[in-house]
Each structure stands twice: as C-alpha cells, then as structure tokens.
Length: 232
Image (cartoon, rainbow, N blue to C red):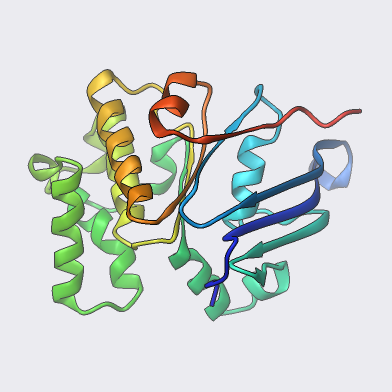
C-alpha cells in the first residue's frame, strides 16, 4: 500500500476552519495543488496564516479537505478509511508518514527519551530486538546517548526537537513532514537536524518542511513551493 510515485498528490484542495457551532468560517486553502515525487525535499514558504501547517496536517490525515483530492503513493486518502474503527489503513498511513509538530511538547509523553523512541516501533508490533536496534540507531544518529534515561519534559527545546524527529525516524517512514523544524534552535541543534534530513533524502526518502529560513532551504537543496493566503 502507498507504493506508487509520485508519493504526494494534492489536487485542487479547499479547506476552511469553522468556529464553534459551525459559525464563522475562515478559508485558508483554495484550489491548492501539490505533487511531490519520491526522494524529493520540498519546502513550503509563505506568511503566517497562509495554510502551510494545514497542508501538512492534510498530508498526515489529521485534517481532511472540504473539496479536492489527496493521494498518497497513488492511494486515495479519505476520511472514512482513516477514521474507521481499528483502521488498518490509518495504521499503515502513519507508518509511511512521520509528522514532527512545531511544538515538540505536543508529541512527547513517555517517562523517558528511550521509551519515547521505542513507542512507535513497539506499536508496530516489531520484535524486541528490532525495537532495540532502531532505538540505538537513532540515539546514535542524533547524539542522544546522554539523554536516554531523561524525562522529555526536562529537556531543552533543541533536545526535544531532536527527540521528536528521532521518534519519527525510528518508524522508518517514506515521508517525513516537519513544521518549522529549526524554529528556536541554536546553531548546534540546527546543524544536527539539517545533516539528518539531508542524509534521509540521500537514502531515497522524502521530506516536506515549512520554514521561514531561506538559509535552511538552501542547505537542504529543497524545492520551494510558495503558499499565499486564500483570497477573500
């Protein structure tokens, strides 16, 4: 499942946020289309409120468009299939797509860093030795050896971001989606994140990021897709 190319196809997407009770409506995407081939690195650029995060949430099936279509690896992604009880479709999708939120606190909840990283592979039902191998690999990749037993809430912002990305990479996804991955990071943590993302793409994987930092786009060699706010 999801083995086709292009990996991402968004076609003529409309999306609006609605107020409580279905009152006020704010349209953030109108007629938006995007195609991403396997092995690409793509950067979404645009002002705040232009819909960058919304695009990423749609790609990760956390939101669903009001109109238009989304295909992942050639397979239509629709609300009914994702939200079906005990959905094998949703489980497979989230093994193929890793999403790193802008606020890392949103996705860190285990008692220790090691348990955070092991959580995803364990949920996949992998053998214990394979889980341990994946944890060791990403801990080494991100230089997290000294943090394995630390509680996530005690980490710095840069450390939390590295752990959040490590958690996604432990699932070995085809696509890594990152919302402002270097926002607020110091130079050292930024360099680590950039180096890991470049290696991920070099291995034939796909990256979609949003950022306001042109230098990060250049260092990643990313294709730029500009998003403007939906016209009133």
